[in-house]
Image (cartoon, rainbow, N blue to C red):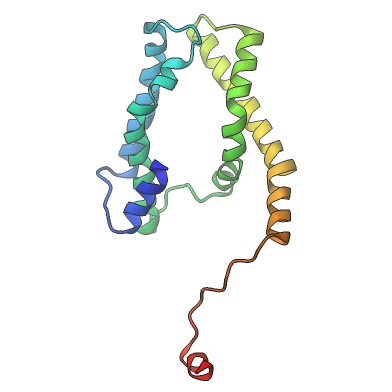
Amino acid sequence: MLGVAAGLAVKRGWRPPVSLPVAVVLVVAFQAALVPWSHAVADSAWNSPYSASHLLSAPLFAALVSAAAYSDLRQRATGLGGPWMIRLGNWSFAWYLIHEIVLRVLLHVTGRPDTTTGTAVFWALVLTVSLALAGLAYQCVEHPLERFLRRVGPRAPDRRRPDRGEAVAAT
């Protein structure tokens, strides 16, 4: 919801406080800061420092979304419109549903990594497996179901304005 609100604010004329490159650096730096935080905070589930960080990271992600939307409105090249970025966007809902399950299963199977290298390998594995499953879920479930629902579901009303000739003929 915050991303939608930020995007709508930009569409209505609000200018984000930082540029897209600065917003990217802020988000990446904050996420990188969570790595030592996860070692400093006692945590039985291991990843809850990330969960606890949601409130702290929300303004940074809002800045990222609004800076990207502002760049799009200004028609600046951002690299976000390429085929792989569009594909990842299509997979994002399935990834949202799947990644936590993959994380929990891999934690159960492998245990908590105890080295920095082990942690990096673990997260790379979580990312790879969850993205592969998200792509599969999108291709085999979400996209076919969406096409089916669009075909059999109600049609959106035609909201185009009649041109002057159609308006006169209607009266």
